[in-house]
Length: 294
Image (cartoon, rainbow, N blue to C red; front, side, top):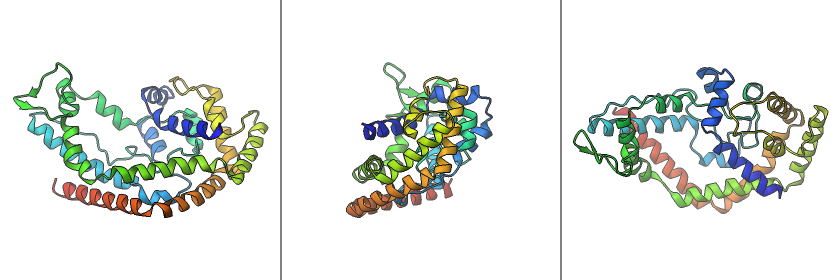
């Protein structure tokens, strides 16, 4: 079925920000600045559920606080730790990143459907010593239980940070509600006639470019995302995809229909979402306090 296939592909978009994809960006000759630019472009649309999500700017505030807490823990273990600047460009993706597939012409031209690498993540993993990795992530089976005479916390300093900071302001059930709304609104949008008509217009446009796809999901599935080398055909399809989305106003038409669905779902789950945003605000306030005292 198209609906289940669509949700599976959208999930794949997020899962594929892996090493193969990062290598793809490197193979394409992209600099760290270019990769960061592709990661931080703003989405050309918004959805009602966005109001209950943590924005990229807020993520930067939280990320900075997390680094401070981790650095304090590492110092207690007698380890130095110089985290990459999480608040810099390229650290965080915008809300709804590639929800409707590729929309960035620059990305399509450079790396097709592959995801841009995150230079900050690469710098982190490449510069840590074995002791620092244990201090950060925790003790491996059979590994040392302490470093420099200090017991490593469960889950390392990242685990300690999560327990003492992130989890204090979590609302798992409310977050599950938001995730369910996000998945179901996407699924239900595929069934709506205006979206089907938009797909048909997009497909006709793609045919004019020499490609036969019923919808953007099918075009994405044609890409070999597990291959670190981006083919010229993938780039051609991706560029035509982005052009046809713009020409047929597909994103505007699709997001309009999903917005209607989300608005209805939000009204039915208002209490959970109010709790979620309340906890987000408390998390951000706590992060700002940590950042101010660093």
